[in-house]
Structure formats: C-alpha cells, structure tokens
Image (cartoon, rainbow over all chains, first blue to last red; front, side):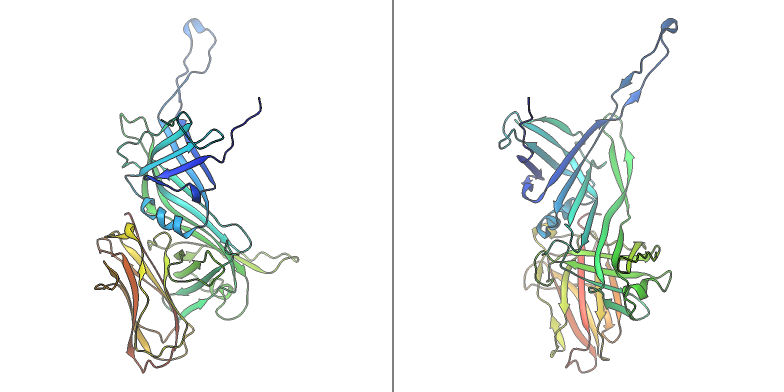
Length: 145
Length: 260
C-alpha cells in the first residue's frame, strides 16, 4: 500500500504558543540508552546478545528560515535551565486531531547555528535538549487526545 | 532578496584605533551559539538530561581579500593575539538595516588565517574566530545607527521596545559600539539606557566615554543582577568640541541575556 501521509500537517507548539508557521523542518529524537546484559549460557550453550532498555535519550532539532520575530521569540528558551514544554503534532493528511501522533517534553535551547551568506538560504537550526533543571524531564510519544 | 543578501558588518578592536564598516568585503558568516553540555542523569528519573555550561560560540567570516588599508584581510591577517569586535546586522527585507534588526556580535580572537587560492575563483578569506572570554548574548539587535550630519550636541536615539518577554531581565547583557568614519576631534559620551515604559525615566546600562575622535570597536558588559528594562535607547552627549557637524559614524548593538 502506498504511503499516504503528507508531511505538511504539522504543528509546533512551544510554551503554549503555536510557532508552526516559522519552521520548515522538525525532528523529535527519542531513543533508549541500551544496556548490554549478555551472559554466558547455562551448560555452555550458545549465546544471543541480550539488550535491555536504559534511560531515555531525547532532543529536538528545528530548522527555520531566518525570521526576526521567531528569533526574538526563542530568546527566553535559550539556555533556560528549567526548560519549557514543546509539543509536536502530525496529522493524517489533515489537521492534527484525536488519535494522530504527538511528541512532547520539556526542552531548552543550548545551541543554534545560523549561517548568513549572500546568494544562499539562511536557515537557523535550533537544537533542543532536556535540561537537568526540568521538573518533568520525561518526554513522550503518544497520540493527540 | 533578503535571505542572506542584506546585511551590514563592522570589524574593530578596543585598542589600536581600528574599526571599519566591512560590508562591501563580506560575503557571509557561519555562526554558532553554543553552551557546553554535559550529560547528567539523576537517580529514579530514567531520563538523560543535559547540564548547560560555559558559553562557547564560534564564527567564521567569509569574504573577498581586499588589499586596502582597513580591509578585513589586512586586519585579520596581520596582528596576532588581538581581541576583535565583530558586529553584523541582518535585514529581512530589501531595505537597509534598521533599529531592531537582529544579527550576531562576536568578541573573539583569530584562530587561523588560511590563504586558499584557485585560478578560477576570486581571492577569498575564510577566517574562524573563537570566543575570548566575553559572554555575548544571542540575537543582538541594532539599537542605533547614525551616519547623517549632526547639528545638535545631545542626541537621543529612538526608543526600541524589546517586548513583554524582556521585562525585568537581570541576567547580564552586552553593548557594542562601533566608531568609524572619524573625521574630527570632537568627543562624546555615549550611553545605552533602559526604562520600564515608553518615554519613562531611562537609566544607564552601558557607557562609552570620550569616544568619537578615534576609530574603535568597543564593548561594555552589563553585569548580572543589573535590571535591564524593556525600552532601550541611546544617548549621545558632547563631551568636548563644538559638536556642530558630524565627525564620526556610529553603530550600536545591544542584547540582554534572558537566562543565566
């Protein structure tokens, strides 16, 4: 069956405000810090690797064409040690609604890169990380409720 | 037109009488604002977090290797172990930069000066600068730009409203003052000020005393715990001389930190 999910129906909400109109790409990263618990087997039997899930590792990369309004709006979140709530929703060929995908967590911006060169696009890339001052550091991948 | 194409830049140093507008030589910059990050993970959270550490930005200046005095090439390829002050304002429109436009400022030292050459391309510089111990806030904005004839001895720049999110910040800041195109001997005291309301009582955040008679790229650090109010402006007061004609050009950029 051919894929029918368009990538255009995305919302990016930061601290309760919808900033979707400013971003061109967003990637929510979510993984587990895997632990290798492989042991020998009873009686010297053959062995298979045994991995268990460790701590959550997460972050967000957001890319936006240079926009002064967006840059000014992001200032409060740069280096914010307690973080702020970021929620990304993706709709199924339509506006995001109940049951669609949702990723959310508490993040802050410790780093951004901004090339500005003649004759080229000027895109700012914001890297969001979970700050150690976040009171609710656990991110989630869920569905829109 | 705007994306990457409309910007103005200045390069100077605090000592040695150096500051020039280098817009015509520049083709672009690569800038990264970065705090060092360390992995942290408290017990019972099950989440890896990051501790944000020292500010560690970097910038790479790119442009044409002009050979004239005051060119970026002549400045950066020459003196070593120099504290350079670089300012750049970017416009979103096809118009010239204006008060409130944001950019990047960098106070750093030259890391290297390569001289690449290819017969098919113009002579270009591509020079990285690294931080030299001064915290420069993200997205500084142009607060004042004056290249017109002056007839007054005390000039207030127009107010800039930084917005509601900037109310009551006290995490430090930085003002940068580029004095260039000097033709006379008058000196001025330039102050960056802030107030809680438009037209209110402005208090001084940063001072550049006795400038205007020599080239210079200056900066002034606003200390942490100093309250930086929402509305900003620049005041230029004659310190010595007649002040009847413009004898220098000035651009001033400013930014507060929004977090420690």
